[in-house]
Image (cartoon, rainbow over all chains, first blue to last red; front, side, top):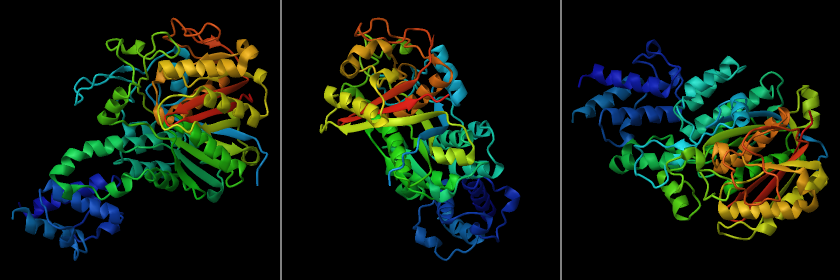
Length: 81
Length: 425
């Protein structure tokens, strides 16, 4: 799966969790909290994306992530492994 | 300090099987429309009782749009808090918004720390947890982190206080089938103690899991056997053929407010709560207790400082349980004795099903709308009353002016409550 496809999944998940957010408000370099996600929303975006992509890795794997791109990268690294 | 102020109902809201606004609910009561139907035939596992008064075709987003006079920013906030929340949260948000709007609290605001919140509900996440279980057993990693908030009953306190910006006391109370009345009583006490000036009381629907329903079947409390194929006939409070309760769903909400506060805000009172009785039978079982029920009604009258002849209507607990109905009818007869002919009785559960934790709230609302519109709703399935010496409403609505009413709710575990409501129109 390409990084672009993973990003698409993450975008859909963000819009699911944050009903007021439109696709054009999401940019890969942004932080989730910049688009209105509180800490629980952020955790939910992570677990829902993992589920969608069928990835099972410890949540600690996302510890160093500080924007949407970081999240997409960790997911992408693990998606086909 | 105990306030001697009158306690008013200034707003009400409901999402039930027979109406998702106060107006549609009132109309269903007038027309005798029952919400009791066969449940979805494909529900698994198959249970022996497949009859209930469910809230059907529920769409949070749609129903949210239909509530009048909600400021835009509140709608957005409600959407955000409710959109992905379990059904019980969504439906309480809707009922609470209706009540808040009806009480004019969006425009004529109160200091947020002078508003209290009583969430009347228990075991509200049973179905939510049951539905998550099979997936959780497969993939525990994917459990939503929100679960840690949502499985707590107090999540309702958090969600509703955030939505309505309530900063007074907030609490969850339970009392089995008397939970609704317990909520009203606890709200009343917060006002009486002068802790707050207004209180949002929210009844959380019983969203039973199949396991909970089977439990009620196995303990012998649930009806729906003889009339399994005729759901609308299954709930028969005070009828010779009653055989147990029929499960109903409803969220319901009431705003209680002191007299001083409504004068200050210049808003109308819909009715007054004038008294209550609340006692325990010291009994852990499911059986009713004649003495405890009598005591609850007498205490409500005493607290209200009114006499028997002031009461001309009782909204009964009337759950269609043979022993429960018999005991309540006897308790009412014993309390009212030679005044019994001044009273009419009906049982709202005949139309709404037994809404369990919200039954008391639903029935307080039913009592107030009957006061406002001068009628008594029918007892659709009451063909052969279990007693001839008590006046039960018949099969059609009757024109009637309620002066002061009692509304009874009794719960498993020996919980007896009765509240007194006065028509101040």
